[in-house]
Length: 389
Image 1 (cartoon, helix red, strand yellow):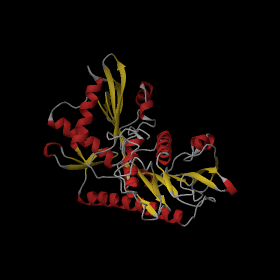
Image 2: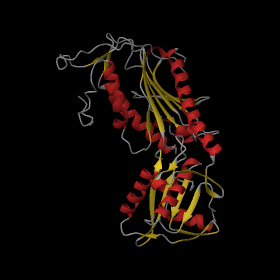
Image 3: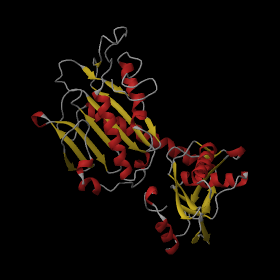
Image 4: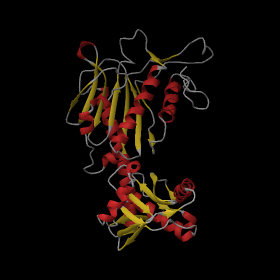
């Protein structure tokens, strides 16, 4: 795999592959031409793509002539309509591999109508993935000698790994919520309810996986807690902790960036026990979460964290809280108070950085409103657009 963000790769990077004689292997493969419309070519293409996903991820590059696995010339592939070509092969991937994989594409112009096509495939944590194109029902992986079909024992191990990952994520989330309920926090915190947002990249559970924390240490302003106008930060054992202060030397919001890319953000002012009534500010909490999620995802992208990312939203200490609305507008509604102390919402799996925060959080917001007796969040219209009523 080219050691660079996909959208930053240029022709010079491809020339370096050639000049440095970077050999094909587990994470990179060169092809002179794009697949034709023949069934055999499409099956081969899908086998290559899925093998990267079931192994360590990597780049499948079309438009480079190779000899004995070494790139010899960057010729490009002639295409009249580059966007149309990309859409065609993206559709083949989406329809021909099950379950669907996470990938991205990029084209780099060589000259005229000739372009290099790069398919970057993320390592999958939801596999194994199989090719299902026209009855071709096989699983593939990769080693240094290119792709190969998985045997029965390897398939069994792959399925077990996927199940183990699910258990690890669930265990991490349960342990953290248990600690938060017990007020076992990294610093003194406001009393009352808490809004908890977890972003858990699946690759965080890879052995020895870690991110470079220096960009945040050098620019701590990027690590902004939820509902904060000013904040401090410190390095700790887990990674970097950013926190916003309040009265009596207590914090009302913090964000812990773990060394493995996990983000934990806690906010306690919106549901503070100092409020006269236990009313959830229906606009404020949604607006702040939407803004913060956008910032957290941008941060993860900057760190080079690969999708998928699992998102959990949890409300703690909210028994007997109710949704703050204009009662005159909802006089016909049989609204009521939340009937439990911990409101744990189902997780959402994000598979692309292109998905908007409102589309990620809206189903969760709807469930919180459901817990208060309303059919949905009324800060969105029927089409799912944010209207901020």
